[in-house]
Image (tube, rainbow, N blue to C red; front, side, top):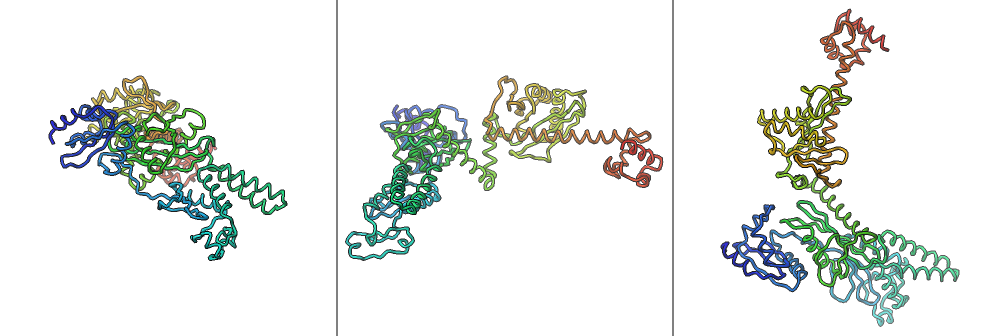
Length: 598
């Protein structure tokens, strides 16, 4: 379809909420999106300049536009989610998850069984979940079995069959794990009381079970049934221990869904916590691969719809970090302080930990993906025009003004390239002058790279503030490299990043990977420079000590060091050993010198 046809379709779009669908010339669905105002949203794709390359490609491919008008923006959000899951368009984020999560089932039958399952059968049974961890399911089952004796057999315990004596108690009865309802040894009313208590536990409400056990324990103690009372006390301890581990906030916070999002250039991670009576009854983190220029708000809105559908959540209140659109009838709360803020922070911490785990796995399994993500993130964080695949960092070392030296360390694709490290003796600067020294080494480094036709870095980092950065810029100007290589300075105290001609420094998040790589570069340059400085001082001190001996010159010192390797070994050498290298006269002078200083 021609560009004229697309313009015509845009011109007839309504100014109403709805969902738009982009198709290519072959009729293949490319993208599904929602909008408060269909005409404005779709028009923006064709009128504004897009920074993201994938968005530009998408726009070029659009040959046909379809739309569906709905009553509200929240209806559009629900429809968008369903269409994405159904058709999985190439340019939409993927929210598909093929996992079959476990549920806890209370079977609809006389004397109900409680067990875990991955299949939901619509027979009137109750299902709690799904749980994202099998461990959580088994922990809950162990807790329930430890507190309440339930049957595990699949017999049909109809009253007439029990009366007719059709069944006999099994080993579970003799072990004390079941009270024998199959032989009528346990009443249906008492069994159902236990089932009600289990329902409350699965909802996160432990109060009724604890109160019931405490009353039972006191009654048994008053009747002098101390062994039975002790068994009930053990159940109270088990339940209180589990409650202490699972209660994270005020128990008054009940039936709430909590959502948070953490994202980088390529992926977003949405964490979901379901809270019941102050307990986390469910936790799940969704990983989303970004396709276009999706904002955190757009991704969070889409994820909330998907997660609430997937986990059948009926909560009428949700906690989120910022304002979003959700389905009608659900109250959105943005906590700022107190217990509600703590639970939102916990959700964000879960999302961050999940992201870190994914990054560690990617580093091992797919190093290329990790590398690309880091480079893209650094480009964004440092406001660069290209990815900093090749970075060089400079540091001066002139402790107490002696032996001024400098170091240049090189990182390629975010990792040290030690074969490219370079050391510099300061040649043109008299005395301790950091600014002039920086100007000299930057000039020498890039003059040489230009002369040899070597590739230049995409980013230069200067260890120091505005003064050192200005000095380095003089050298780039002299070499006509200003504007061809990005350059920043990092001040040690507050980790401030300075840019040329910008008086206001940039502060990166202290936990950001970009800052960590810059710190690693700076620390590596400092270590490399200090090591070089110490080596030079030691060598000079060594030579000076030997050259103070009358009659011992520079050539003699070189011969001695070549043979004995160190001043310490020369001092311990015998007259015969020294004579063999420098002759009797000089050997005698060396022996006398070391005898006088010991």
